[in-house]
Structures are given as C-alpha cells and as structure tokens.
Image (cartoon, rainbow, N blue to C red; front, top):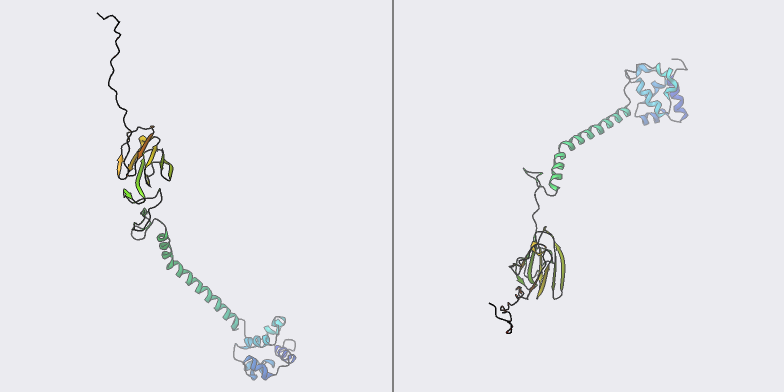
Length: 274
C-alpha cells in the first residue's frame, strides 16, 4: 500500500504523537499488541476476516483520527461496507430507543384496556343523584332529611320543618298554608313576624302567649293553631284578624245584640183612620 494511502502509518504517527506505547494502547482498547502491530504495518491478513474495518475504526477513534479525511485510504482497506460490522454504540442506542418505544406502547394499551372502564364507572358513581348497578345513570330524587328529635334538642327556627307537636315549652304550633299569595302578620309578646305566603310550602312557627294573626286575602289561607283548624270563613280578597289566648283558643268576636222591634209612636190627637 502506498505511503499516501497507508492507514497503518497514520495510526502509528497519531499514537506516537499522544505518547502512547503499544502496550498502553492495547490495554486501553482491550486488544492484543499483535493486532495493533498488524494494523500499523498494514498487514491485514493476520486479522480476523471481516474485522479489519471495525478494528481500524476503534483504534482511530481512540487516537482521534478522522477517517473521513482519509477516505481514499479507508476505501483501500480489505472487505466491503456490507461486510463491516455495525458500530456497537449505535446498536446499543438503537436497542435502548426501541425498548423505550415498546414499553411506552405496552403501557398505553394497558391504560386504555384496564383502567378505562373503571374510570368511566367511577365518574358515574360520583355523579350526584345517580347510583351504580343495573340502573346506573337513572336520576333518583334525594330523600329529605328531617331534624332528629331528642329530649335536649331545641326546635328549629321559624320556616324549618317542626315536629308535629301542638304544644311544647317553646310555644304553640301555628301552621299556615296558602293556595295563593297572601300577606301574614303575627304579633305576640316579644314577637312581630311578617311574611308573604306562597303556594310552595306552609309556614310553621312556635308562638308563646296570647297572639294576633292578621291575614290579607284570607280566603286562600288555611290556619291551624295547636292542632285545631280555624275556620275563619273569610273569602278571597278579604282581611281577617284572629285573636288567640295562651292556650291557642280562638277568641271569636261577639255578635252584635239584636234589639226588640219598636212600635211607631201614635199621635193621640191625630184622627183615627177609617
């Protein structure tokens, strides 16, 4: 091989420039010194068949020799590009990339197949007003919760659901139900409540002592005091005022007393009629 095309000489000069002995270079590359001697002497017959180019590339990389700048010498090496063994680092990198892609694909398929239905089922279970099971997704009405009753539990404030007990220490139970809008005014000792009743629901409250109920448009309102229905007899659009004592008894107004009929006075001097 000519001096200009000799890769062996290029490798030897590069080794000597770095101050490396054959022994040291062989130890660094985990090669036998005889292999390096054959490479520097361009004696490729003593090398394994097909290993010429991989060995030259390995040594050139260690010695920082750019083989691309010596393309003609590289082409003169025995063997062909098809016979050249692949770069081990390139193979390792390709295996790592393929492994990552494979693992990612398997993980994605597992997530879609296994947790997917569970996530959908969980979303339905957490949806308010629905339940799981054979009829999952069917709306069900929430059951109203009434306040628990106990010996030491105070009654709720006005407007809340009260226990159906006519009389308690808190007062008399008053229930007003309206079929149309009506204004209500209740006055008692320490109580002065006003409210416009609607059809949506009754008004329940506790009242102590004597009290007065005033209804505007009384004909659309039914009144219950201490468990008794009060038949006020008023019509739609009329106003009714009801007075009750401490026991919840309706103090009906007294009807006006009827006077006996009077006879017309007769003038004694008047002539008698015929």
